[in-house]
Length: 336
Image (cartoon, rainbow, N blue to C red; front, top):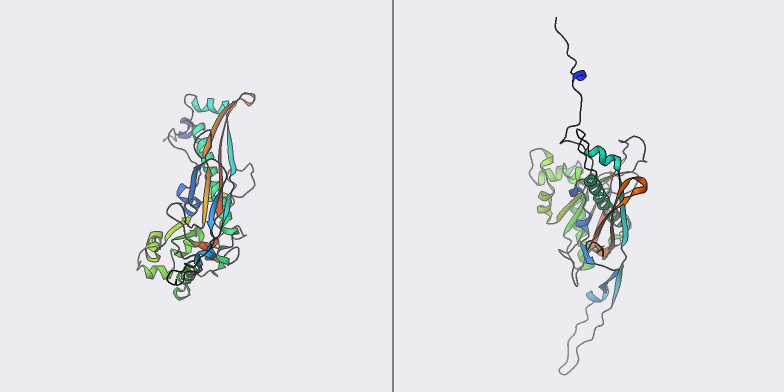
């Protein structure tokens, strides 16, 4: 007679020491720092000198008679204020958690490491949300807040109806005519990219007869001669509850309208580095903390009353539009 050994009753289950699960956005999915160039290393509120666009493009030169004076042109300027705000997040590490983490035979938790990683991710999310808000609340190139309606035609299932390249050409012409600068960067949110990468237009254009996922942003970037940035970070907008998996997902860089999957894209100009007499659609200004010497300050202290260690992270930054004429935004690229 065979015997049925109930291994579950024999083996005492324990945590695997070198394996755990954690949720966090990929760092590559945060793209705000790549859209608006970063100005850092300063320790006070500031302003940026801005020359007059009207004066810069007005033709004032003329012929000069022998012994005469050259035509005199006056150029004006104003400024853009940069006002950093403090974004912060804290974590608490109870003594009980430290005891459990260090007890022989227990799962080797790393409460302090995990707290720091979580706080740094929260600051990244703060910057990403601010960049998204700037993008979707600014009237870029006078086309209205929210951008031009692409009517769901980027990646249209009918190749002849795909308007992506035509729209980009019109946007490029608009930026050049307003600023004298050719745009060099195209931001695409994840819902827009998911439709574009399987579109008949690009499959045929790139002669891709294999799996559609092989179409890469770089392949399209090489064709269009733009840097392409795709943002896919998400946030949970559900109310906190006892359910640890309660999740209502929203793409951070997508529009905040009810349908977060409609797709959007922004064509814009950004400099390789910030500098004098340099245009940029926007800048991100990070204040240097006087205590850390960096733009992020990590603080740790003992909270004896609650038998815990406390940690927090803070960063002061401002993200501001510098040249609204340096960008064109499209909405509803994937869906109407």
